[in-house]
Length: 307
Image (cartoon, rainbow, N blue to C red):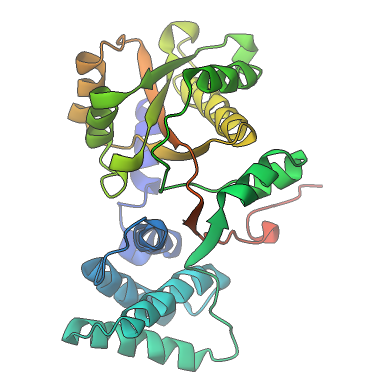
């Protein structure tokens, strides 16, 4: 456990990120996500995220200065370009935005052969998503999106139960089935979303929240992380099942303050032996909505074949 701690301490993105290409890229990607989700909110605020946008533009310039341009930057730069276009179209001006615009313009002019159009939002309809739900698995998997704008119509508990019934076929270590499911509605739903903290901008339209935990009683000494693996496998199966049943969802990570994790245990009577793995916010689709474009990297960028 001590060895594992030191390995994580040396490898995590918060430690020495200014002198490490991958760690700096992690910070760029986190800021990109923080801004990109703004394009998929039901009521997109003008001048949103200026501080993050400024920091992101500086980091992109620093990354290029230190390591040169790589394909990893196409989405962050595309997003910054879209961000500035949004403010220009809405007639929003400020000295801070001018500085951001100058930085991004220098970059796009330097790499003018590259088409920076891989970020922003995509318009979707309820009808499209219901068509995706009834397609083959490839259509369902590639057509699923994280939703941040839900209809006011409640999701039936029977539908939640059906999705859980489908997801229970997920594999788990030695078929120990350690996953546990907690469904929150009403004020309990609002409270757990507040503890998580990442859905404040759209929490009002979320109908229900599902907490996936893993029971530590099902694991041995050398398996401290298997609960997260089993819980995550179950959670992804559950989101596919929800999509199949015509229900929108979005995963909300639980990399939150320890005191808030403890409050999840104490304030909702979650047993101490259950580790919180993931929250899933759910709701019915509105007739039309926007989703974050969220382009994925090509498989050659993360796949290695060992022969």
